[in-house]
Amino acid sequence: MLVPGVVPDWEQPWFYDPNSPNGGPGPGSGIPWQAWCAPTSAANLCGHWDDTYGLPVADFTPWPTAPPWPSFDWQDFEADLNRPAPAPLPPAGPTDLGWHMDTNWLGTTTWGNPPHVGTFLKDIHAGLGSHLTFVDPASGWTTGTQGCVYAAGLDSSGNPAVTHPGPGPAFAEIVGEINAGRTMIVSWLHWSISPTGLPPVDDVEFWEFEYPDPNDLDPWDLGEEYNFDYGEEGLGHAVTAVGYLLASDPKNPWPGTDWVIVHDNVWQTPVNVAVPFDFIWWVANTNAVPCPGDIDGDVDTDQSDLGLLLAAWCSHEGDPNWNANADLDGDWHVGHGDLGILLANWGCGTEP
Ligand SMILES: [Ca+2]
Ligand SMILES: [Ca+2]
Ligand SMILES: [Ca+2]
Ligand SMILES: [Ca+2]
Image (cartoon, rainbow, N blue to C red; front, side, top):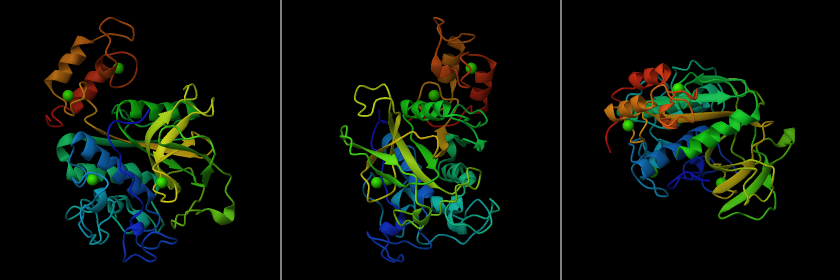
């Protein structure tokens, strides 16, 4: 199961920037573009919203091409060669996702961070939300991160984010987002993966996590640091989830294993990489949703959504007038909680 449309598979910016230390395909990366996994994963997400759903959050140039460097929206806002100096939000003008996320301590000062390499877990949804709201204020974007020990922002229904104490709800969240046609950013403690040798299904190749050698925690030479901190500062590797394969799927070459299919911003691996949903190494899911009160799926919250909600009013799952899309808060009942979410988002979005 993959999301509709095409999701970009950008590599990290040093891969493209001839002026970067050790720039171009090959070993090595460095400041400013090292450890750029979270902004790159977010650029894939933004490119998908732009290319597939027409929301103005990326560079209006369909994958795989990009506006020429050094445009600020180069590569779906992944990187901006002329990025502003660190400063409070909002930025003086459009700039890249890494600036919004304070990646490598070179971006906004609003998050109040100490010096660090890469992106803090707490800044992924905050920076993504800051970017989305800056470039597309009309769509009522919300973002949130739900991790094993850290949660902040909003879930995809517009409720306060919660932690996922076990693999079931964590994987179910990814399945729910993919089924809704949305990609997610998924963070892991490390990205030491190797091929399983299992036969590919369509264009998906199956890889597996290793128990990494502490002396080789940057196997792809991305300049990333893996500090094995599950908390809000957790620095690991972020990827873009584009699909899943259930343990029960007849196509599954390793029955009993749930897989998440990702674009991993590693050039040495294929476009579609499936890894087992391994709760040992999973850290968090980050969602981005326009208009949580949108029930009919046209990316606005207006009378047509209210009409659907009222038509399902007071219904429970299984009732004749039940509408799962109207259950905005996910409590298997359509009622005041859902109406509150709809009214809080009233007027967001635009008709396509
Ligand atoms: Ca694009
Ligand atoms: Ca790859
Ligand atoms: Ca709507
Ligand atoms: Ca409800």
